[in-house]
Image (cartoon, rainbow, N blue to C red):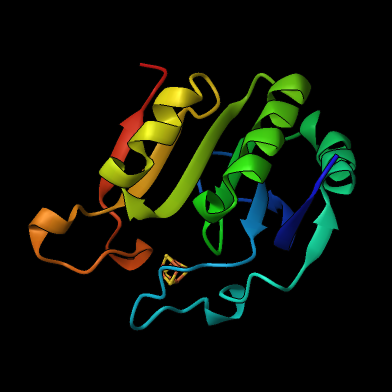
Length: 147
Ligand code: SF4
């Protein structure tokens, strides 16, 4: 299994979605919003971690977790690793997956359409048509894929 740039893993996380969740923070963000409070997650060269090791840790937590929350950094800057990680979670747990991204729905739409069933809900940046700069600080779009 390949490696990914990982910022951190936590369990339980109780502030990013319902219940006691596993949190995965991707390392690396190319969006670089002004005022970002997570500048430590921008550098994509940091935190190289075997996805197999991440999967092992998720396996230790999955049985007692209420879900998985993916954030960053920017998860969609590592689309292949993101796909592997989400497939791992689906194999471990029936619980819902929530993802936060700094991209707008238009930008991530093709990935979502190409990977059905991997996410249950996504919080995106506002679209550029609002005139606001993209970035998670202005996150406003939520799509629930399971309803
Ligand atoms: S998308 Fe998030 S991590 Fe990336 S620069 Fe914007 S606020 Fe920071």
